[in-house]
Length: 133
Ligand SMILES: [Fe+2]
Ligand SMILES: [Fe+2]
Image 1: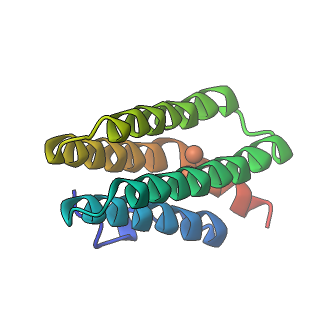
Image 2: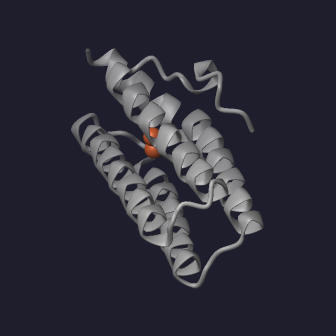
């Protein structure tokens, strides 16, 4: 999946869109760095940065869920947790020298998850946020 066009992922909530863009930027950066053969320490630190950005983003959304009584909170949070597990698996793989095929698959998994997640979960949440602004 190409991330060149962000339009399909826009929720119209500026704060959420900005964070989504940053996450996607880091997913792409991490995969590029891997393809370029950057050293393991650098790859792991980039993955940790991505994980931190992602965790902060989930926190932002979850604060809004609570604030505005979002009806699908538990399911949405469970979805957030799923990608967290993906990050943990990726860290393990990197420690044991991951292959380029693995990283390409990882990118696909992350971007596909992101696309489905934004459409199914984040867009309705953004609508709720916007309805209160
Ligand atoms: Fe979300
Ligand atoms: Fe999100």
